[in-house]
Image (cartoon, rainbow, N blue to C red; front, side, top):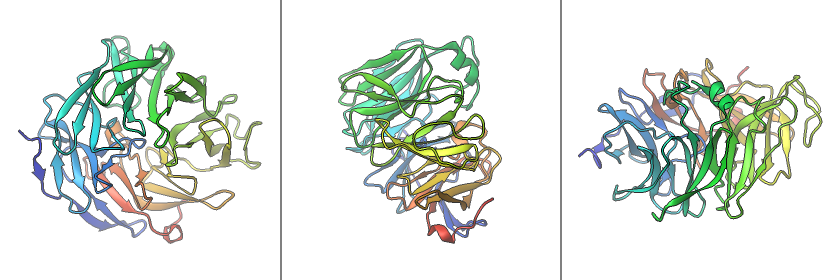
Length: 390
């Protein structure tokens, strides 16, 4: 069996031509490799190892790279293709969770033993997994399978996007016990639910989104209390605004996001800047207090930050650089080029999805600049040492 197989280090370092930063390419294989989705931290073993999914020997499996030696360990040996972009790590013990054949599966990252925790009902498709801060539950969104009416290939990012939103599929949020005692649906509605993200500090809180065109959904970002079953809008959308790509700050209290105003300028609302470019970046506490939004005159796709001081973004399809912005107390300076990624964005597993390490010392991202998706690690130097981008 390949499970437990140790692959020699594949990493190589090189000086980035845009910034001079020494980037480390962690994987190098003729098949796509990718880190977990940017809302799902993949570090374990006290941050010494990082999970990633990889297509090797004609199958997709879960792997772990030792960030001190570069050594790679194959963690699963699965017969059928599965996606690991939505996998997550238990924050209290060395265990991770992923979808396989409709079931939430737990893997002991030491023994590599697998346990099936819960199987979703027939007629549904799986979505993101996230573990609660106390390690007791894995939370997941599941969505009515409309593939008999709408073409939704597994690895294509936006196929069927508008059609799925318009169909109002039955969606549920499931809470699955990590001790193996089963799971249950805790929320259900006829709206496309996606991106279930648990607070990294508050075990009872998560966010989910009403998926679809950002300027057309009733509200993108929603909060949910697992202890009470209450759901509420977070950062209620006003008029034709577009708001999304939400994620938790490391404190588990604030939610970050970015968006655009429909008329190129701010409407009446809390925390709005006086000047405007048409786009904004913001954060708000989960209970909609202490909202702060600032003008953000830059194109960006996914963004991530541990707090409001420094944010990283992947630009957009056709862009070349991983970008950094720094908060100066009134606005964000930047962008500055951390490094070039030159990824195609062609399918989800080669989206760049940059995110900071827990200590903010480096950024991990994925790029297919070599022809195949690989995982990269770029240290974060002093902001002022990085070259400005237009």
